[in-house]
Image (cartoon, rainbow, N blue to C red; front, side):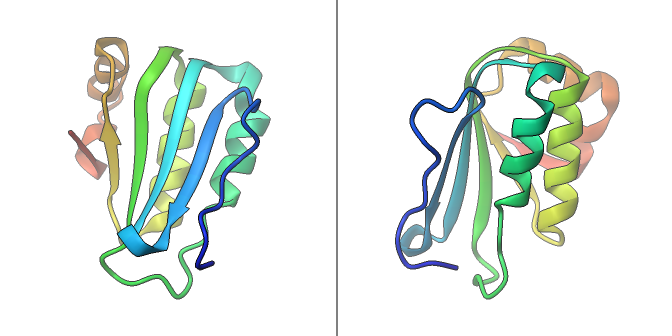
Amino acid sequence: MSSRPDTTRPGDAVGTLLVDPAARCTTIALRGEVDAGLEGELSALCSRIVLDGAEAEHVVVVDLGAVTFMDSSGIAFLVRLTQRIAPRRLRLRHAPDQVRFLLDVTGIESILDVD
């Protein structure tokens, strides 16, 4: 894990990634419409999460506050990310009602934490 914050380019369509070793936290802030059109970007974002050597207390958070729409591609991203960071649990913050509905319908809210 690097000792300096790592962020995606500000213009990335899907969102930003911030690694803050001092706070023991990796935050992914998604924005806009998270759908099949962003599948490649979501996959790339997921692959950038590296927790080798990170302390057990290090958490991974996905902030969904700026998401205006999400389909099954977004849900698939959350599942892949949950698998990638296991045994840690993924934390979701600011999930809009539409996203909460998808979490409930798919049943994946049982494998992550929703604030």
